[in-house]
Image 1 (cartoon, rainbow, N blue to C red):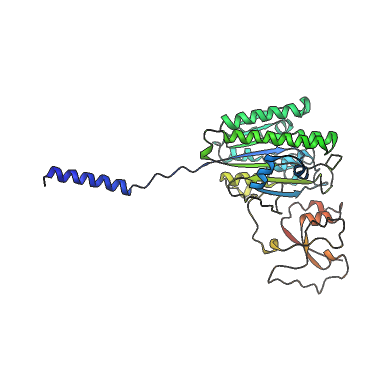
Image 2 (image 1 turned 135 degrees about the vertical axis):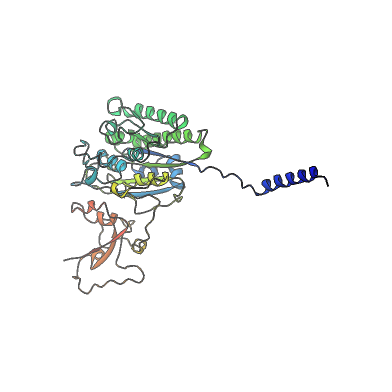
Length: 392
């Protein structure tokens, strides 16, 4: 065999070897992005009654957690404290906002989650669009955010301003490239204040559901959507009294009830956790984007999809016996500890209602409902199941 032919065979063999053993190029990891939509004063119980295919679809495909707000003397169940808690991931005793005056705000120490992202990495592209203008002018969503678009629903009406907010959000989400966005819609709150939680409120909810769909459609129409991993978070700052509307006090079922909904990677479809808090939005955003939370931030926040491994949080809770002011549908107490644990009640005083006789375990909602105006409403840092003892 000629040297030339040998060399040719050798070259062919080498090329074949490269073809066989060269590993395939790995696909780039999807780019993670987040959209947080805030709907002011939205009772989830009314969402259930309304025709809301977008919210219903997100809830079915994602995780939905309900919780109760604080009330005075910690803060009013109003928008200033509510949106500050959502934005900063801490409770009013830290962010300092106790009512809609924003007096005492501590946003320099506890900034919003978009500002935190900018501080962690200025390469993040951040966006905030809203029509309750004070959320920008007061700095609830701060000036470090890359793009802030402000409308004035108080001056111009929230029906029209919500449309402008939605149109801008659609444009930014489809044609821009934000990594993390906050969009606020306010008309539901205004309608509830004006006419209660009846048919007009239901219609306002349905309108905002359609506006949310416009935003999600804009995301799906992005040319880079196939290579992106989007987390959608929807939440509210407070509820409304039913049927008359209004909030700010210590009512349980309506004005103090909030919720956080998250749909995306890592969020179990149909999950309804009982340990969610309104402050969890911030950490849910950080977790999706892979941002490590610095302990110095001192957040009161955890990702919505992180579950407790504490055996006490797995206890099977019962409905009320003597606490007849609590609906029978609310499961919230048990005298029994986890397997392997015993409760020594020998030194405990006797008497009292069944739920609190001796030593019991309960959750925040059941405890808060037990009796109003005894500051039980302000156990807002309680998560999961905790113990309460009768002391006399």
